[in-house]
Image 1: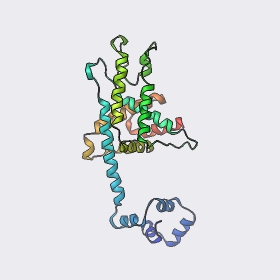
Image 2 (image 1 turned 120 degrees about the vertical axis):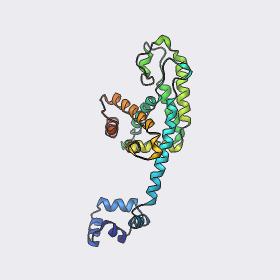
Image 3 (image 1 turned 180 degrees about the vertical axis):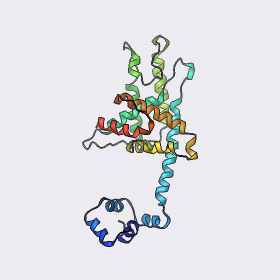
Length: 252
């Protein structure tokens, strides 16, 4: 709990006001008491910064960079001179929406992702397997239209069995490279409706500049996934957070 002296210095009001607000359980007093220490408030009053949060921002930046580097594995396409190429980014963003939806399957209807990396990997692979083409279907491409980057593919030019194996191989390679910090960052992005990632995209940080193309590609695919499930048109990725919230409300 932050002591009275530090709160009075921080808030610049009288002791009487402090005790009135404390008795009334004003949210600002409870916020300071719950999430800050005396040391942090004193550091802020002296320097204008709190080193813990500066370090957290740096950690978030590094986590973002590592996460985006993992996503580069989803760009592995046109290998073996195939007549089409996979859109693995779009595949992953569809999975993210499914992950969000399942995170609300609790009595509180509050989103709860998992921090269990092995469970997350298995969940992703189950999703991949369950969304592979059904070779007995009259039109197997309808079942996996979000895997391929082209709408009109001639069935006679495609070896479905090979493509299924190749898809699972590539997606398995991607998820097997996923680390604990990548899962933490993804959960953070979901909890704040991808605002953190969007802010990194808009920042002038030199460390992010060479990754902005990947962020944009990810957001464009996430936008497409949202447009499909919400049956709407999203005009800009700047509004992605609004539509993530709308999607969350629809699946609670």
